[in-house]
Image (tube, rainbow, N blue to C red; front, side, top):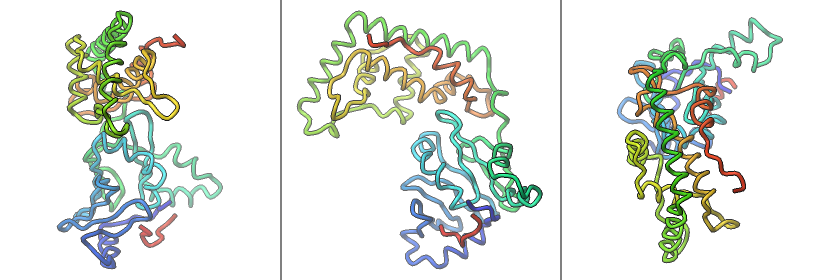
Length: 304
């Protein structure tokens, strides 16, 4: 884990030894650093995790979909590349803890374990634009603590819409509509060369999240949306068929995974405040309405 106060100048000096600037310089074994103008971008694949700027600041630039796809790697490796600890708190919710202050804590508490510090160290909600001053490693635009930004009326509206939506899916399952759609999807897939050619919704995109939101807010469950849920059922080598309980379970999973994005659209979070929720709140709002589908170190010279 890095606990040094890495600065913009440190990154600039380190990058001068890059053999091919157009291809960037490797950071550990999972990322690359690129120089774009006077800025330095830390990238994981095609996603820009954050940017070092000449005013000696670092800004996280991942949107919610990118954060979700990068989270496993960042939670395991970010603190070994730059002095920030990435932690997953709940579905779609992540926090950052600057690590340089650990050294001071260690001097004052020589017998303490590292987790004693990180258990109580300040943490900040991740959002696209979260910025830290690298002189102090304090955030310049941190958002208020989670739990202080819920609009009770909008939350009630969201819960009511969620219950109604899931009830609508259940009713269509009882009426045989879901069975019919399963057969349609099965027939469409017969012409595909492999499962990689199957047409499936990408729920990470705003387009499909908007479709889902419109259905919840209007109370109208369209056939296209229900068919999209059917297509999203996970299948594999040992399970090639789709059952009605599979569809109900997948509906639950989609609503749980994208509940933050949906609640943002419902206005559950106050304007200008954090767009996330606590893990307890998350469980109360989504899991409580689940459908029943029982069987029926230090510097290391930017080893970046």
